[in-house]
Length: 232
Ligand SMILES: *Cc1c(COP(=O)(O)O)cnc(C)c1O
Image (cartoon, rainbow, N blue to C red; front, side, top):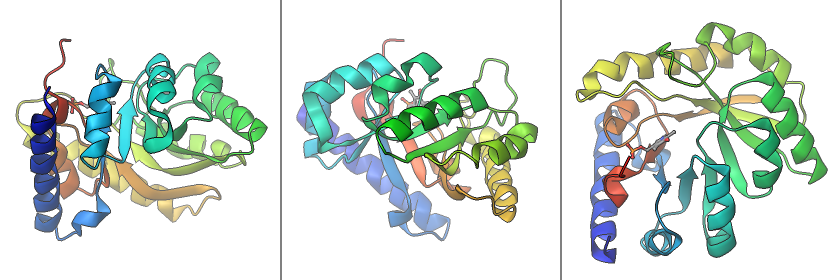
């Protein structure tokens, strides 16, 4: 994709983010765009960075390693895909935030690896808010007890929740899931657990980010609307 297209797409997306925030009575500055760069080659990502992208999201460990080697620390990396325990060690020093924490075992491994490099890893608890079987994430009913356990781990800082809504052509259909995630984060916040902060809600993708912002998203993960449709 040409530089001009990316620049233009980014401009449009930023305007839409800003409009959605304003419409919800929120400041546009509250919403951080994470450009999802899975399947996008490093040279294209570099162009996006030149156009003002500060944060990118990847769903594969291997891709983070490869892109980090080329692009380095010009951009912040977000791990947004399912993370296997045995791969934590490869990305612990590279990523700014892990959006896909979904078990105590994984939390223990992240904590252990972060401790080794004297880092406190920012993580979001991924919630399977719709209950779809195909989706990763913690059952909302189990979130509180899991967070109580995780709260004892000193090298993990939970900074909020993440979810993926079911795919739909009509984003209004998934508004309820974004509302549910926001409400869950408010309930958890009431518990005042140590090392657990509910400041971030990572929800909304190309097809539903405006609705997500309307319901309180402040991290939106957008890929195809910036870089074009993927081939899968
Ligand atoms: C691919 C992906 C996105 C971006 O999806 P688009 O529809 O391309 O905007 C967001 N979040 C996760 C977890 C993804 O895997």
